[in-house]
Length: 341
Image (tube, rainbow, N blue to C red; front, side, top):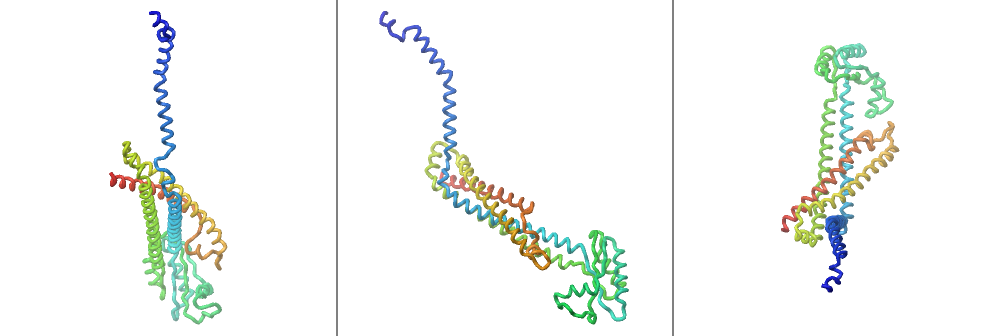
């Protein structure tokens, strides 16, 4: 009895202290385990499943940047052609021309005045103006040259008619009224030019859209090859993940996040380069002015500048390229994992 009481484990104070320590451990055990789990989880998230050096990031970023740059240029060209075609069609369809050919024994000035009165009575007609002989000669200078005496030639007289409301104007009725009253008259509503302009614009826009789609397809193929290379390089990691029970969608999500960052980086570089190209190109083309004060490029395609519509198109390309990169990567990884299981 004396030996057991001498043992410190059987002293009342020691027993109480030991019980208190045990109680504290029990109380703080969940907190300690939660802290360890959070620390391990943070360490796991800081260490990516797909190591950055295992993906050909630099080369893929360069490819995506080039494709984004080409896609932006194509989309901007299509936008410029569409806007300029709409402007041309609006300008051409906003007026028509009445032409009166000289006829023997007919007073040309009287016929012009009568044609003006008949035309002004038609609904939808705005300003009606007859061109002077000198103004007609200026129009013929590119073909006949300057300094010619056109008084002896049967040069038709022209009447320019502005259209205020194309919906109200009946060109067929106007043509019939003029033909019944005036000899040698003809009405040109520029319908042939408008149809040709529409065909050319539609072909150009369709070609640009086709090129834009081909650029996107080439971008997706590049991402597929890069993803397959990354999967082959991380075969050991993938096998270990499968061994510990990781699902295919978890692995695909890790690759998708990595390639989404690459797509955003490459798309941002390419779209920024396209925006800089338009800003610099617009400044350079401003110095290339033609005889009329505008550059030939502006006469054909309109202003070469970073308009709000073009800038919106660049943002659309950035979002589209990034989304396609992520989606293509996920689909490629899922198909690859389905074949190796």
